[in-house]
Image (cartoon, rainbow, N blue to C red; front, side, top):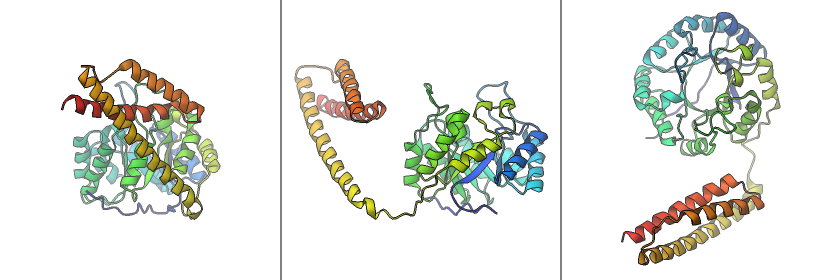
Length: 355
């Protein structure tokens, strides 16, 4: 289905990049919330985020103060005029948040991954005109992400946005959640009118990664940032390592280079024509490679050989990765390309063996 969307139209917020939503991972105490909000407001932040209900991976951790924290957020709005944003995971959360005057709701990654839970939220939002931001599911599934957006939009919520917070991985390496930028890029291609925010705190999981991730998000044309900021990050009750002070956040934002999306592209038209020509050559070369792969498949069929030859596959991946590195292409990129090529070659050879 096509989404029926309207601009987010946040009161008092200029629709210029980046729209920044910032605040503590969790609303821990009234003092902590107010101190953080005052510092953020002093640095020009106009939207406060704070977790009231905190779904934790394992029991025993701080799971939020729940409805008891909502009056603290109301006090923030009364004193600073900031808009308020919080996560909701159940219809009861939605009801309490709306009663407390919360301005923006977001749906967390774990909830997005559960269509039953998303539908319950959508049903509770019928007839409500409030901006709702939907985080990507924990697994890299753009269809599941779009499905959650469609369910909420189907309930009549037209002020929608998406939050890219990265994807869980057993092998995390540098990031807490792998960015996998191709997923939000595909979402933007499919729904170009959908505002897209980046959550560098959850992608990075470390303070030192927030600045470069913010810049990458801006370079990809994302509309906004949702960043965890705490008046005393080292003492935070949840996700301490990925939170920054309001002053550090201000420093990060001031260093951002915001590139103009409206600049004419006439000066790169010829270069794009070269890209198109090279792409055509690549497709022809791939077609030739597949023809050879089918001939090999026929040979394997006649000689009763298995399709998959593991030694040969490992040789291709290792060799092509090294060749790509010499040409300035990352080994990861080469692995992805040749894994896809090998998968298609195997598919075509399987067709021959089974005909």
